[in-house]
Image (cartoon, rainbow, N blue to C red; front, side, top):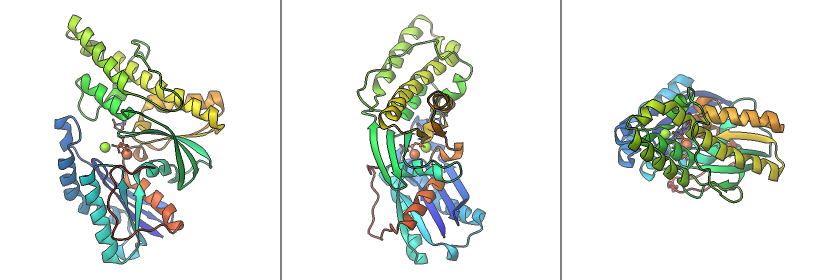
Length: 332
Ligand code: ATP
Ligand code: MG
Ligand code: FE
């Protein structure tokens, strides 16, 4: 079985080919146009997807060495994401499936982030818990099967990736700032400054308070010393990262305790964060968890994870038809 998958939910145009259970190519075109605006501009994202999609899909097929006539299905991200971006991938996938007369498979992007764990060994066993942390989501998910997932906790306001990116913006760093905070944090003291972690009941999260706290912290300190950020960048980044990671870890530990599940995975763009990867690994040693952390290229948006999810749907006989439309607010 050979599947070509397309991901276009946000600002990455990606195509991947999964052939006989193996990812054979995973091409990702990241849109750099948004950097000058400090965030993703939906209209520009949609246009960039239109420019990239054909060469990206062609390249994925060529690199995989799979001719179009050997494809068994076309998969695409139905949601969640930006409507204009999703439309490009959905329209392209529909046309391709129609032209080749092969089945069409719609994939939930957040389900795919989790199923990225099945691309290569070691693969988690069911049930497992997944902390999905990305630019638009922060969720604790109980995974009972490849297509059976339950959100048991989630953010009530901002996503943690957003908290990383907005903090970086306050520090004058370019978009997306999450990876830069990670980089500067490596040379800093995580306990240099303290930020409030907030009190959110149960397994839910809230990241809007810390963003405001960082804003006031920077305002007060730069009032006294205009060069404060430059002089203390590493310590500030390390402290912000430490706080965000601890907020995630607290809830992840609680979820593991309450469910009695000790197979623990992380997924999504923020699972590329070295502080989080280290903290979860460490907690795993202390608490006897088996920890699953995706390879970097499968953390942030990519079509390989869409192809992986599509394979599970193919096996379950879950196909869709030409009447399908994107779903920007698709739930898990
Ligand atoms: P969603 O998956 O919720 O639809 P998205 O697709 O935009 O959102 P991803 O591509 O999965 O999100 O993740 C992007 C986010 O990950 C950005 O907020 C980015 O800053 C963050 N991120 C990526 N690498 C790191 C890192 N090393 N440290 C912290 N944050 C990171
Ligand atoms: Mg992105
Ligand atoms: Fe994503």
